[in-house]
Image 1 (cartoon, rainbow, N blue to C red):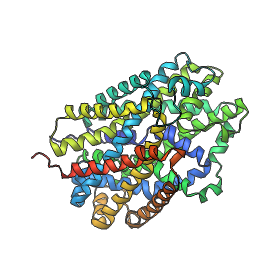
Image 2 (image 1 turned 30 degrees about the vertical axis):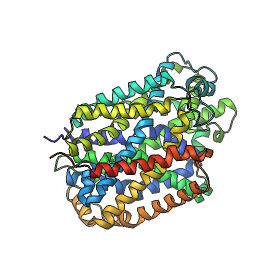
Image 3 (image 1 turned 180 degrees about the vertical axis):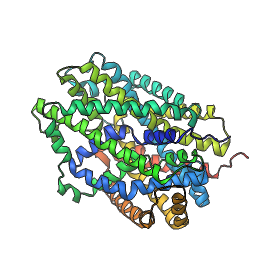
Image 4 (image 1 turned 135 degrees about the vertical axis):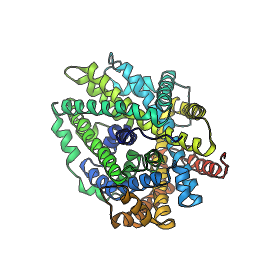
Length: 486
């Protein structure tokens, strides 16, 4: 008997939990910070309205219409598009391998927060004592066993959450969605009361319109929307396939998309108000207090926590607990989408799939626990988000807009919803999103032809980027060709 969500609330919370994750509290604030503060909010909103919400409606509609996980649902549009579904799941798999390591860092830092073990020099603690970072990606070094332990704990938590599929996920998300939201509100309230908070908020909310002329700002906006909403991973198609036949489609798509965007926006208040406080305490301008994405969560924030006039242990514990509870439902949604697809096509036992997924992803994740792990994480993350997800988004629009009756998908969605979508959705799916995202993708490819990403060597870029993408295409094709059990 097919698993179904026990209630609409379970589905909405699971979808929101998948969307709301580290991308909202760690990735969104840093990308916003790097792209000129308030200037980033404009392309982010445009990307949400022109690609995020239309693609969310598309994924929910396809999953619900065919009542099948991503590869098989897309295969019903046109047989060959099953490959696209497997490729999307493999991109999610690739992200899960390092996402779990970041959560492993958070497990370690949750323990460190009880006595503020990172001390005065949080940068030296993170890079030299915790990561023991090497000089380049090719200098792997040994596995850091405390990080590996955090990785193991993460995978135990993920497997436990999806043990019985939608049944256990539907219960877990009541805690993993509500708890981090409550903690986030505590951080917003605390941040707004800190000296210098207004300077941080000014940087966050004041647009630098010159930044809008930089295509990379728009590229980051679209990739952030894809990453944050978990579209292009096959997750939302799979989650929608667990809905009862009379369930709403369009309302849920708008609700989840806007809830995710609101969380990212409100999370920005928590982060930038505390960055303003940090700038106030150090005498640095807000634009110079963060150097990298991981540094925001594991260097800058621990420094801010240490500088707080009171309650450092409490706020440190709450912060890393928030990261863990935010991250866990995004992580297990990536696994559940892949597991459901393998179970559906090959009639495998859930126990075997869950354990196998965790073991394979965990073993691959050990690469990120080595001394050069941060470099490989950076390279793989860049290629998964700026190439993998964007390709899936473009091809999904092409699949529905050009190789299937997109009007039929719109009419199906409207027939299941109180709130109707119009022909603007057709235009977005068929023309606007594939053209705009395609142009950003091509421009980014040209940039990578001119120079390797991040100043890394060409061999490191190839191994951590292009080779991974090529391998996923090959594996997706093999999964498509392999016959499922009757």
